[in-house]
Image (cartoon, rainbow, N blue to C red; front, side, top):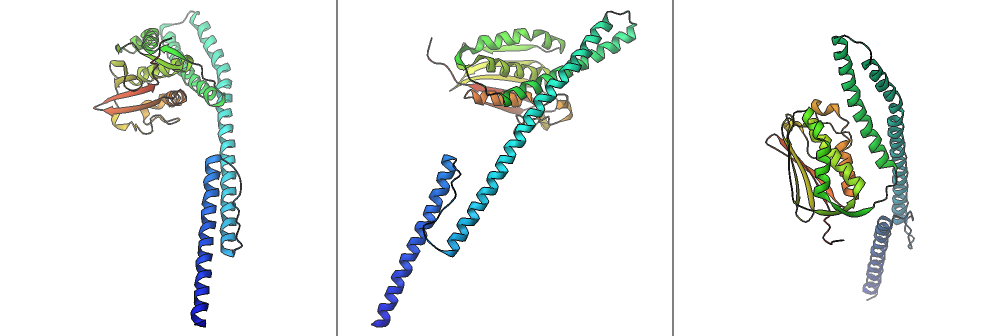
Length: 297
């Protein structure tokens, strides 16, 4: 009886200790969950004195501390990168403006036909460089400035039509025809951001299209703007990475920064929308979804 009594007591103590350990582990999980959800830096603490659990808590806190330091370093590096982009784009504008000015002066001089051809080639590449720098400048502004959304009711169909009309010369220079179809749709969005999205979509297809461009404004649960155009390197385009920063994908796209579509996604998501693309049978379709405005003014 004494043996049975002792064993019973030991069993009860073991069960109680196991329950206490489980409660402590549950407490650790609760603290970690709270730390994740509330973005706190509170270290993990224990109520029970146990060597193994104490060691576990110490190691967890050390891992969390290292992760915090890595996160801080990553944020600092990202900030330095953004500042670098802003500085580079700003510094490049000054000499580029000077080059453009001297080219205009040269145009007024008496040049031979061969010299004018060479000057025209130089001007063409300066224009390309201006576009690249503009993308860098736009991107640096978006990621460094604390943009405040001014959500208003916008006639999306009219806005797309106006932007396409402004770009007629660009498409004509590249021998492209634009087919536009759109039903009257109103969205709730920031007008300046929406304009940037549309202009970047136009620039993207104008540069990479090898045939006529189809533009459509339609509605599902959201307003959708889509640009469809054939490309000669469709098989090399990785749709999953198309909107990533600095993605060019192939030599044909290397004449651009790869920032245009990245900016499209950034701005679309900031306005509560989304962006994506599909490639099929040599044709790429890039689309943007924006929130519909169902209430009239």
